[in-house]
Image 1 (cartoon, one colour):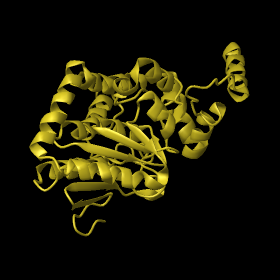
Image 2 (spheres, one colour):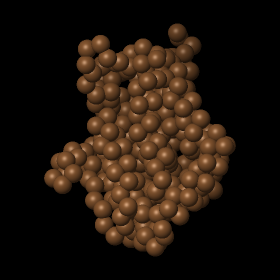
Image 3 (cartoon, one colour):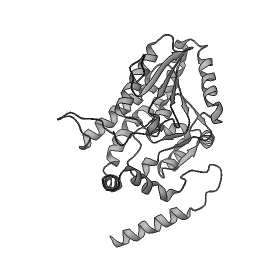
Image 4 (cartoon, one colour):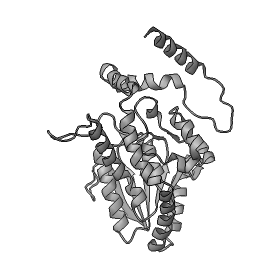
Length: 306
């Protein structure tokens, strides 16, 4: 727990014109829980209201920025008679609840910088891409492997960053890109060596600190309004409903069954093993992967027997 703020799953500090919000569940690679998202939302609005803050830095403690949602605590504890997520509308409602908290990064007046290192996967990309600027370590891993078996992307700003073809390439396979390659396709603004990542982010926050927060807000918001005119916020609402739709697929039912029978670790292994390293090679031929071909042949053989 942060002794000064009372937060249990994030750290919060204000210094030199910036609020640093640190995801603080390093043992799980900062996997998100309902409590973490609630605390994040509260901290973001606190920073937005604090006149001493010009910008927000969002970062992760330990080896990763954020590995996604904590699948062992998804949904949290529910009171009897409250939504469980089992019904279709319950599912949409709970997804939208999380989405609203993440969208605070978009809706707050002050600019935010995502400081991405290590894994930035699945729901971790929801956080990063909702920030105004993403600066990544060159060796960061960015992707949404959950799209292989667990549903659709509940937040979806990818197309607005890297265009529709790269968005499809990454989402349709669940493959990842390195921070260096993410810069090449526009998914992040900049990638730098890991040992200078913090300095790069803090340097940008220094520059924001020279600007009147009211001017920062005006220039952030006109850009975001432009994206909203292009449908960006409406798409986020639709993405949540689309994810609930995808949860009704056979693949997701099979995934849930495997979780019960084999556990989380083995289920994730079975999901990802056929994809090998799972990295896209930007600007280079990728050819065919023997593991992927073998997995595809096996799946077709099973399909013929059904």
